[in-house]
Length: 147
Image 1 (cartoon, rainbow, N blue to C red):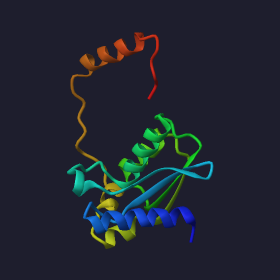
Image 2: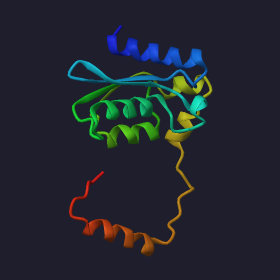
Image 3: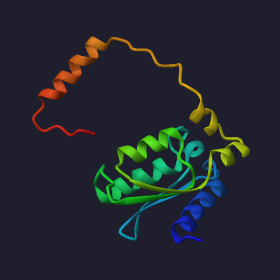
Image 4: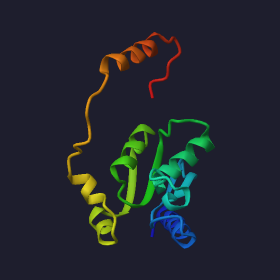
């Protein structure tokens, strides 16, 4: 078994034994060193965004004092959901290793497959012109970050 996946599994077990959430653990590695770790804390935090990958990304960013995790690899017990996939992309993590796939998570009662395969009909554009004004303010800033 891969060492980093073993540690991700330990994170998942820690979370489920504590009643924090589902069996999702994650570690982030840079240059052979674990710089971030986390497990699902949705139930504990009363926050649907506290997936294992998100918690590990937050931990790694805090540890590196950076929002950019370029050069890192992520190990997670299950294929990242769309939210976590987005977070991985925004963090600039280029390589993700996962254990269980979307069908596996469906078998234990999670809705990942629904989110991966169904279009989202809840989007509606509203007050675009007013929002564009804020974008223009941002564009005028001299020291802006593009994240």
